[in-house]
Image (cartoon, rainbow, N blue to C red; front, top):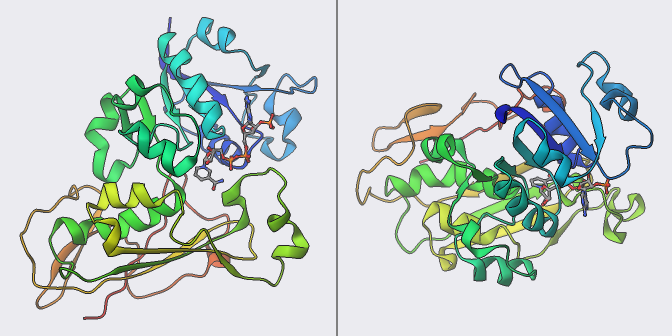
Length: 312
Ligand SMILES: NC(=O)c1ccc[n+]([C@@H]2O[C@H](COP(=O)([O-])OP(=O)(O)OC[C@H]3O[C@@H](n4cnc5c(N)ncnc54)[C@H](OP(=O)(O)O)[C@@H]3O)[C@@H](O)[C@H]2O)c1
């Protein structure tokens, strides 16, 4: 019988899939986790492919087959796969009765045209878009709890939405002002496939902006902050680092237009100034900036490290 706590994972050989494996293998609510790979290389167990996971249990590895997943007891499938692969696989697994948590961009938009325009890929199954829930628990935890198809947010988009949305919801952003999102990422954000600009000699001791005014995470940011595209300046940079994102966001505060706190009280941090009062999401420290290196390997599973600092 299908049980959502029995989990199938596709894409463990990729960067996000491997991080996902580390979380799932120690997750108290996961009864079983089976990893499906295109090339098992004779392995039956995940630690045969990734010896660094020794001590995390004997999770089975199987040759990828959607039929096998459909016939299995898995009730949830994670797709840590390219957009076009997720777009094709998710409907088949949904039809087989599984719930899907997709890490790609394939189901992040209600409007199929938005996906086509920004990703330059054929639109995924349009009927499925309307049932997908944007997987940002700070804002959509109730919908996520009942969803069969969860579209996890993009990395940059997460860093911007968590910071900006509480201010936007509370009406604190000065009307007509620009919200400047100056974002920087390490190279694993692009996945493991070979690309010239991600080679060591191109990346090392280098630093550059890319995809200015055309980054795919733009429509996620506007949709989930409620800000028009004309008000958002979203610039993305590639750092000579393997991983991590730092987003420095500049907002002009104005008199509150309305007070409608959009963030749920859970997991939020109250921040008070004489004239301003707003909620901020998971802010472990308001008085200290952490470097990427100091965070390395220390993040709590499933959590985003997030900090806010304000000057008024
Ligand atoms: N990297 C990030 O920081 C990040 C953050 C948020 C979201 N995402 C999204 O998450 C997804 C995965 O990203 P990633 O960076 O982990 O990618 P990645 O490192 O390139 O890994 C892709 C994974 O998908 C598998 N795969 C590729 N084509 C497949 C197919 N036709 N059938 C089955 N499996 C296939 C690959 O398996 P093989 O080893 O067999 O090729 C690999 O395991 C992408 O949609 C990405 O946009 C990435």
